[in-house]
Length: 614
Image (cartoon, rainbow, N blue to C red; front, side, top):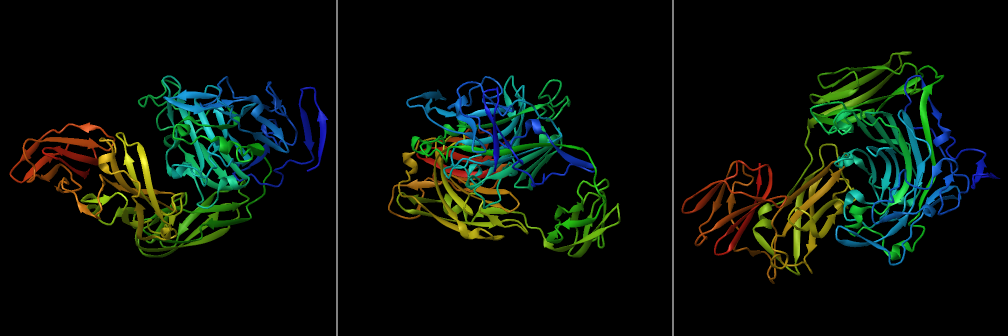
């Protein structure tokens, strides 16, 4: 791109480009009927100028200060430095370095400091507004971020938060995912809420986001509505009070009081922030860059090609010229519900309203807003008609069979719970899976159906993982997944801390972005040369799952005994009452919440079993 260079008195150099880098790229969000998008030049930037790195305060392009929006220096072990963010070669660049020998103590751990950069817009934005950045995420465990934050740090919208490294310990933080989210905070005492649904970690199942530049944007339409766009496609919507602030943190009076609904939602003006972070919670898990990784400067530089901001304003629009339905051909199941979208051209027409109709509502009915409900087997034709110019389009809905919900379960729980497995041998695992009617298993950062043998500490933190994935399940609706977990080097149960246990876990993600999992415990690993050696101290219990009473065979118990219950969180649960006869103990579990439990009986030996409370 040709540039004209002008030296300004503000002690930086600005290059004026003949055209903005986003010219010709349509704003993907709909501004609304009778509205058009208007560029907000004061907060948009194509970075076609030079703002060299400096340790002094620098107003880059007249739009960005080379620091956070207050005096904070970053989440430890991050320490932001002014000279680590600058504009060069048509990009805002955030670089990374590590001062030799400099470290901090966090939660009792010594962590090496990471020097990174942060920039804040000199002007704020507020709804309704569309903000989009064209970014190249770092191939690093560091976070690459573009986000919005209110001046009082109580409301936040994360446009882009991503970890581009192939080194991760949780599939939701892989380099195939983008964190598209928001936060509502109470500062005193500090309380944070953000969505935890799978959609907040977006993936299309194939793209590694750090491999190139990608457009990531958010339409902050109003305090209760956010739309997220990736490369021009709508990928996520959060709308309504219970999706934006279900915990009443934005109450105007007494934040957090659920009995006093004065919620304001995401309503405050916000700064635009571009930065990178060595996030504390990740660094404590070992996901901080090594010195060797930081030596690769390219992998640890966050590049922002441009950022553009638009507001909807009244403007000239033409009449309705066409309409289509998306999707236009649906194969589904009795009991399913889904939404059809009417694509009116132009999308911002003065009257973009439509009327829906089904020719066979007994098969598939449709609401005024396009929600289809499937009642019986057969075929229905859905017609949409525009109120302006009476244009029509149709969609075919084929309904067959009953819906099968997604699920996963081990082939035979008793095979894993009633046998021990030898150190140095193999743990052969198998599970039945169904992705749900009309859905498929996707890679999801898991490699298909993933099996985990996990060493668990009290409180359900993970001490060690031993994993295998079955990639043959990818693209299938249902089947049997198998794997062989090597136990070479896996400590025997007797060699791990006495309060730890082994947990067998299986999981997959389907094409509806649903995360399915199942788990059983305890799994016994022994120092033995056999395979499938019966466990002498395994209790026999029934029924399992149980509702109010649990029966325990105790014919082998000798002498006095004590009963111990451990919840899934590692909490010791009081035993409220039991009856005993010559053969069985009957334990009252009616007071227990639903979930997994470990039962231990201490007598001449330690006897154990696990069960599910329904």
